[in-house]
Length: 551
Image 1: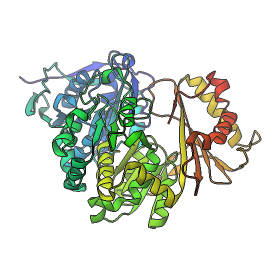
Image 2: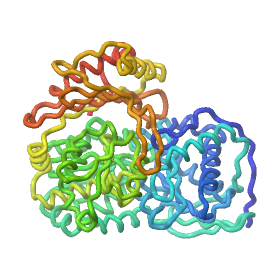
Image 3: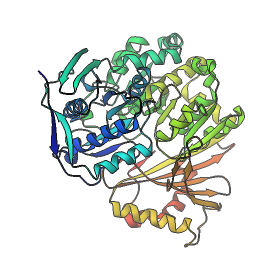
Image 4: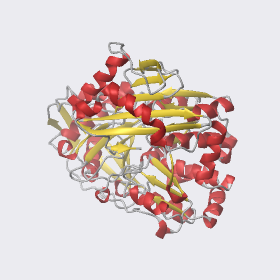
C-alpha cells in the first residue's frame, strides 16, 4: 500500500517559543488539535533548510511520559510526508537524552526530535516537551530554535501521511511506501549504543571490583533510566537489583516529580540515611541529570561534583588517554571548579544556563568536561549532560581512592577551600510576579536604588550577564543578574527557562571560605539570603514566606 501525503490547513498557536531546552507546555495545551503538528512541521522544515548534505535520517527519542506514544506516531507520519528517508525509535519509545546524543553522533544522523520535559512532572495533568538536537548530538542553537519559532507564528498548513498502525514494542525494521518513495522505520535498543560508548570511557572492571565490596544503589524515579539502571548497574556491574529504586518506567513517573534533588529525591535520601550503602545516585525523567549521595545521606552539590571530578579526572581512563583541555560551567554554578582549573593550568569558560552553550566549546576542543548547578554533568563524549556518565565517574573515583564519598569531598575542601552554596527556587509564580521581581532586582543593578550591604560585606560589582560565544560569536543577553561582594561571594537571580507555565525565580547563593569548611550551609549563606530578599522584595511581591525548594 502506498501512503499518500495529505496537506492539512491550520493556524498558529501563540507561545510556541522554545525555552532553555525546547518547548515545554502542560499536556492540556499540547493535546489541542494541530498543536503538536504545527510545531513538528516547523521543526522539520527548519531541519531541511539547515541541512545541506541532504541527510534525511532522523532519531525520535523520548522519556516515556504520557502522550509520547501518540506524538511518536505523528512524527513518523509527518517525517514521511516531508521526505525523510529513515526514522529511528527506541523500543517502546524509550530513549534517554544522553543515549539519543550518543546514537545521533555514532550513526551520523541529521539529528533527533526528543519528546521530553526532563525533570518536569508527567501524566495527564503534567507537562510535555519537544526539543530538537542537531547532528553533533547537542541541543539546537538559538539560531535554529528562533527559526522554528518564527515558522510557528506563520504556519498555514502541515504535511502528514495517511493513518498508519505503528508497533514500537519490538526491535526490527519496517519500510513505509509513500508517494514520495520509501521511508525506513527502525526500532532499536535505546541503551546499547550509549552503553558501548561508556565502556570506552570507564574501566568497568575496576568499578565492578568496587561494587563487589561496597553497597551501591540507584533511583530512576520511574523515568527513562529504569532499563539502563538494570542493564548497567545490575547486569554489567553486579549491583543487587533488589537495592535499586523505582526502575520501572511509567508515563506519570509514579505520580512523583522526577527531579533528582533533596526534596523530590527523598526516597533515595531516606535509604542512604540508613547508613548501609556507600553510594547512591538518582536520575531525572530523561536521564541527563544526577544527584550524588554518600553513606548517611551525605549530599554532593552539583558544583562540588564538577570540581571533584575535575580534580580526580586521572581516575577515568578516557581523560588519561586524551588531553584534559578545559572546563565549562554555567554562570550560576559555583566557582569551586575554578580553583581546581587554576591548579591544573586550564581555562574555565563561564556560559549561560543551557547545555547548548557548551556545544561549540566541546566541538572546538576548548573544554572536555562541563557541568551545571542544576544537577547536570558531562564530558566531550556526547553533547548532552549525562546522568549515567556522572554516576560512573564517581564510581571510578571511589574505586581509585578507596575512600568514602564524604571523605573525598572533605579532602577536596581542605585542599581548595569550600564554596558554600545554596539555591532558592520560587516555583509557580505568575508571569507578572516574575517580571516585577526581576525588575526590582534590575533597579539595584542599574543604580537607580542605593545598594545595601551584605552583612559586614559590601557589593563591589553588579551586572546583567551577557555572553559572547568564543567560537561562533553568538551573543546571549539578559542571562541573569549578578551581585559580587568584596570577599568574593555571589548572589545571582535568574528566571528559569525550563518551566511550562508561569514563572520560576531561582536565587543562587555562594560564599567561599578557605579554612572554615564544616559549618552549616544555611547559616553561612544567611547574610546573602537577607540581601537577596531585600533587593528583590520577593516575599512582598509573591506573598510567600519562603522558597518552594531549597537545594
